[in-house]
Image 1 (spheres, rainbow, N blue to C red):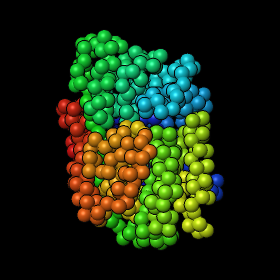
Image 2 (image 1 turned 45 degrees about the horizontal axis):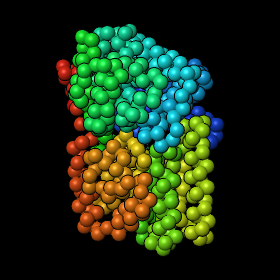
Image 3 (image 1 turned 180 degrees about the horizontal axis):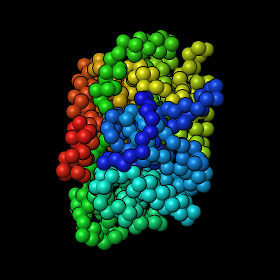
Image 4 (image 1 turned 60 degrees about the vertical axis):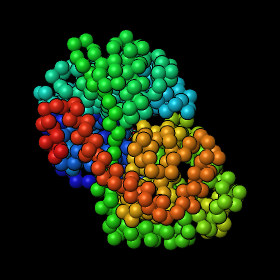
Length: 477
Ligand code: ADP
Ligand code: F6P
């Protein structure tokens, strides 16, 4: 990361997201250092904004007063503080224990507490006020994700001169699930403060239009909604990655060397299966482990020939459901290794550390099968990163039908992760696929991602939001 000194100024482009692209991290020697935050939102926006005169409004992790941060790669960091109550009730509570499960098919039970809603409103108000301060007259403001759904409405009240966009990185649920939310009308109203509401998939935009009519009685199509004297546009803008950057990284000689060493350290197996997830119950980690364990038990795969590398970086660690998941995953990994591993030859290599991009690229390069099998996922950028990293056109992507990426990467080996037999068959099919078939699929997916990269996403979203085209020129679009 290139870090420069802060400058007080207003910007013509302001990105507002719960997290800043860097997080403080306490190193082993006790020193505090700043690291890129893991997660899809930062992976998508960070390469896009680099060297753009923009401001990023967000939380720097931790509680207490907001630290003053220097610019990162030319982008101004404007920190919004969270108190320990805000962290508990806004971030861990309303965002990640009410909205997150509802938006992901309620695969875990959502909780509702009035105190959490109060915190959500309070924190959204704070973000809106911070944004109002740093946005130039007539600026474009791009609000991100489910933590900040009230910001568009609150910001419009403070600064009617702004052009406001909202983008939801996670799925937007069908009406029968969203209707459970006690404050559903307020949440929809908040989003409608934007000029453009973007989703990952067309189905999500459709769900939103239906809800706006059902809950608020507003006339809506899947493209436009009339709100008082304004038109709010809605649409699908599937997010992507910096394809060229990942391909160039994966093609570097040191990454190829690291990949060779990794494969050797894994015992030079014939085939490596890789999964890279945040430790989240939406990612289908338990189902995947069960499928792998049954394949071992049935003798369909053998430990010396095939290994599974499961990277699962801990996430939202104080939320009860995440603690339970981690315990269950770790118990199951222990059981499978105890039952099927041998001395020096575990069945599963289980890693919970954050890795730098070089190490991730090397891991992608050794994965004969990349198993991305979430129960529900807005997009899943790991699937796209894997494809971009396979500059050799090899490697099979096993992909859940319930990841947003499946709508675009249709040449992947698609599976339903709720169907254990189907998941086992899918894994076997990917492991045993003919190299020519694997190659043809990978080539098609790589060609798609070369065109549909993060810049194409920004171009398509921002040209719909800001029809003057000024912003795109600044982003080099
Ligand atoms: P989500 O947004 O739910 O976290 P995505 O798959 O869309 O899921 O994005 C995850 C991002 O986090 C990817 O860019 C991936 O490379 C990164 N990531 C995942 N695990 C790690 C890890 N262990 N170390 C560093 N980055 C990681
Ligand atoms: O879009 C999913 C998301 O909540 C992103 O906002 C973020 O990039 C990622 O998951 C990681 O989550 P968190 O910010 O809670 O660590």
